[in-house]
Length: 81
Image (cartoon, rainbow, N blue to C red; front, side, top):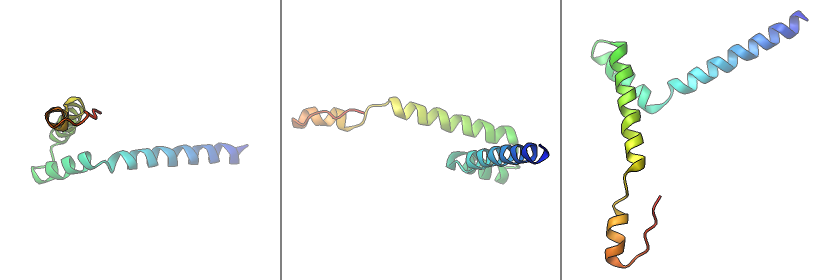
């Protein structure tokens, strides 16, 4: 019984560690942490940077591509997203 509990706890800890490790490897978060460390290491600055980068990425998903404007002029079909 003790071995089962220990095994479940180890698997849980490894899973949480893996998840946090993957989240820490996101390029945007890594860049923001590096910039914050160069500017004095303010944690709130890094968090603001990450949220700003996520907002920019979200906006880009909603913007039409340049092809959508040029394709009709050239007679090509509009591909869209």
